Each structure stands twice: as structure tokens, then as C-alpha cells.
Amino acid sequence: MSRPRNVSPTYIPHAKSGRGRLQWYDALGLRHEKLLPGPFGSPESLAAKARLELELAASPTGTPTPPETVTVAEVMCAYLVFANQHYRDQDGNPTEEVRHLKAALRGVRDLYGAIPAVEFGPLALKAVRQRFVELKWCRKTVNGRVERVRRMFRWAVAEELVPPGVYQALAAVRGLQRGRTPARESAPVGPVDDATVGATLVHLNRHVRGLVEFQRLTGCRPGEACRLRRCDLDMSGTVWLYKPVHHKTAWRGKTRTIAVGPKAQELLRGYFTPDIEVYLFSPRRATEEFIAERAAKRKTPRYPSHMRRNESKRVGAKRRRSPAERYTRLAYLTAVTRACDRAFPPPQELAPTTQDNGRMESHRAWWGRLTENQRNAVKAWRTAHHWHPNQLRHGYATRVRKEFGLEAAQVALGHTRASTTEIYAEKNEALAVATANKIG
Image 1 (tube, rainbow, N blue to C red):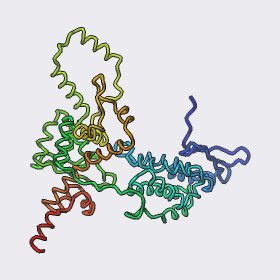
Image 2: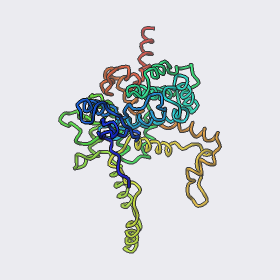
Image 3: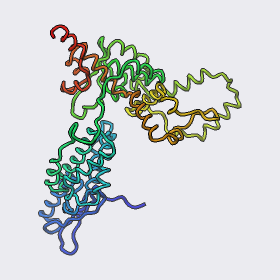
Image 4: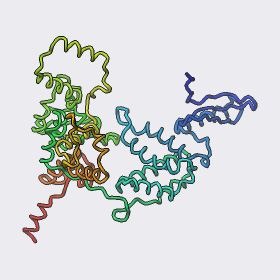
């Protein structure tokens, strides 16, 4: 095993000139060396050493390479090293921004990774944008990914990897405008009706149902519902207050308070455990409840020989992944999506079939036998009959705005600006009809 590289600068004498020099490795793993002024150990040399060490601490990429020789791929590698450390939640886990960055930079790497970064201009950025459009991404996604590419070059300017003119030229490229681009428009997210949610609930386990009902009653974000613990609840008043430690705007220094009314309180009491530190909605406890329920419904007696055989089988068996202590937003969404598939199966000619052995056709075999038109029909069916957890927040915001006004919806959703709340809360068109009926 090779010796790990020393990432901190090493101060050593230069044999031929007698001057001091620093050696170090940058974030890309490349070795660098710089000859310092003055004899080794002199005040002039030590002062230059201190300056360079401060520069390397402020910018781990260093600035020894002339900007003309830095390629786009090298800038990307250095930026991803920075992003993996910068975009993290309070637990130290990478946020979804890292995933979005990698998706955006993948197109840049494929088209322009080998060219010098100083040659990446507005035309190259437009070509990358056209690549995103051809991937059938919607206009807002394309604009967001292009902005991430610009953000990378802005960071590179601050690290002196590219000249400032590179980012200034890229800033001149405007985003795609609605109705004036071949990029498709995404449908606005709206609330989901209660009948659709009710048809899906019967196909969810008790803990995911609790997540859905809690969101419907409080309007919180999916991630806030997944992180709910009993110790995070202030139950001193008639209305409980849930103050999540982790939320969307925590990195901005903002607080978040979710009001939990009587109906939501009654719901949560069914998930309380003696340990107030555990998550109320837990995949691990859901799995344990499922196993216990299945064992209670067992009709075949537990013969000793059968139980011994099962125990011997479990000795060498290892679960690929144990159930987690809490749901993530992606796991929550996956559970809802699968429940929608069960609640709203596609038409018979598009659905999986039952094989001769009585088993249902596997997803791979089913999707492989469908034609391209049939696959598009299945996708259209799913788009029309699927919903996602964030739509529950939209529905809650619409109800609050209708009954109590926009300001109440803004406070309930935790938005700083009312314009953001208007995206979630649908306008009360019935009020406009009643006004026109009286005045018009």
C-alpha cells in the first residue's frame, strides 16, 4: 500500500540555489512546487512561505498553473471537490445540489472537457444548452442547469483558474424564454384531489399513510414530515409547535415553525413510542409491524423442525440493506409512486400479464415487449394518474388561502415572500365569480 500524500505544504531547501521552496498537492492530486525568494530560513523566505500557505488554505486548488493551460475538465474536477464539501446539510451529508451539478456538468464534459477553459465562450454554452434541450428537459430545468455551469466558471474566476472575462462573456447568454424556444414547458404543479389521495392510501403501509395525513393537515414539506420526532414537538399549548432542526432554509439562518392542530395531534399520538428521540414515521418499525402482522395471520403451525430449518437458513443470510430509521424524501416519493401504480393500473392492453406459472410478468419483461408507442402511452397514463407528496402542500396552501387569505397561507407555509406562496396556493376563482355576480 502506497504512502498517503501529504496535502499540507512542505518547506524544504533548494539544493542548487540555497533558497527555500514549498511542495504540495492540490485538490486534483497534482504535485506542485514553488521556489521562494531569499535564502532558506531567512525572514524574506518565511514571509513568502506564510503568504503562500494562506493562499493555499483559502483556495485548496492553488494558483500555480497558468490559466491558459487549465482545461475545462480540470476546472470541473476542482469545482466538484469544492461542491462535495460546500453543499452539505447539517448532518454532513451531500445535498441534492451535488446531483444536479453532476447532471449539468456531464454535458460540458462530453462536449468541451478537453479544450482550454479560456476558450469556453458563449457559443459553447449555447451548444451545451442545445444538448440539454435535445434531452427533452423542460425549459426551467435547462435554464437551471445552464446557470450551474455559469456558477462553476464564476467560482473558477474567484480561484484564479480562468480570467474574469470568461465568466463575463458567459453572463451575456440569456435564459430561454417561454414561448420562444423549442424546449418543452413543464406543467405547473397543482394540488391533488382528496379522492385520488384516498384511493392511494389503501396501498400504503401505516407509516407512509401517517406521512401523507400529516402533510395534509399541516402543509409541511415532505422532508420536514420525514424528520418528525417527539422531542421536536412543543406540546405545552393547545396547538403543538413543531420546530424542525433540518429544513430547507436552515442554511440561511432562518427558523421554521409548523403548527400542529387537534386533528394532527390525534394522528401523531398513534405513532408515539417511549423513546422520544426516535422518528415517528420509521421504515424499520413499519417492517417490524408487517412481519408481526404476517406472523399473527399464520395458519400453519410452527413445527420445531420447520423453525430449526428457518434458523439455519438465516445464519448465513445477510440483508443487502437493513430498513432505515426514517424515511427520506426519495423513499417517501417511491412509496407513493408504487401505490399509485397499484391504485391506478394502466389499461389491460398495456398492463403486465399473468404468466402460465401464475406469477405476474416481471417489469423488465413487460417493458421489453412494449412498443415505443405503447411505452409512451404508459408514461402518459402515469403522468395523468400519479401524484407526488409536494402536491399535498399545494392543496393545504390553497385551502388556507381560500378560507383565511394569502398572508395566513404565507405564514403557514413558512415563506418569506408572498410571491412564493402564490406559486403554491391556487387563486380563489369562486370569489371572483361571486364578485362579478354582484358587481358586474
